[in-house]
Length: 119
Image (cartoon, rainbow, N blue to C red; front, side, top):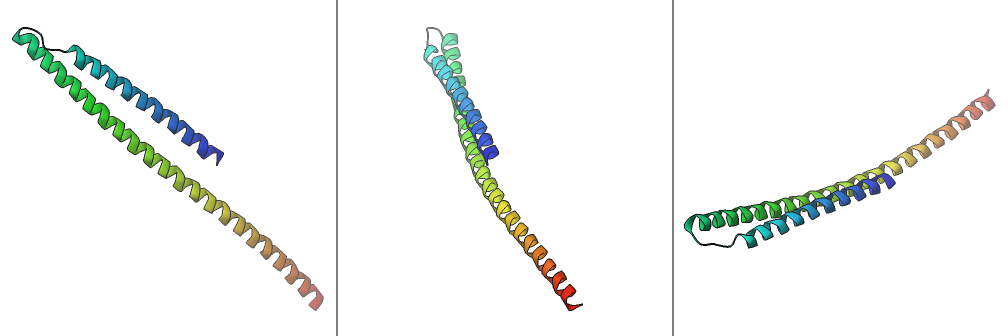
């Protein structure tokens, strides 16, 4: 269980770092958009429009990436939950098998004693 918690903790740290990177990219994109104000002249204005389009495109990609990361995190959390439950089930089954083994050993010993007393 401790191993799963460590894995989960590492995944949360990685997701947090990726979300911080996405946020920094959004901030950079917003700064670029603010600095790309229309200026005099058609070429400068076209360049400004291109920069704004690029900034919007970058922002959209950052948002899509952020959503994908959230989805991946949710999937990873679900996977950890299922894996933890499976590990608990395996532990219970192992304990059951160990009890069965012990009971069989005890029964075998009783049978051997019974055979000796019959002879």
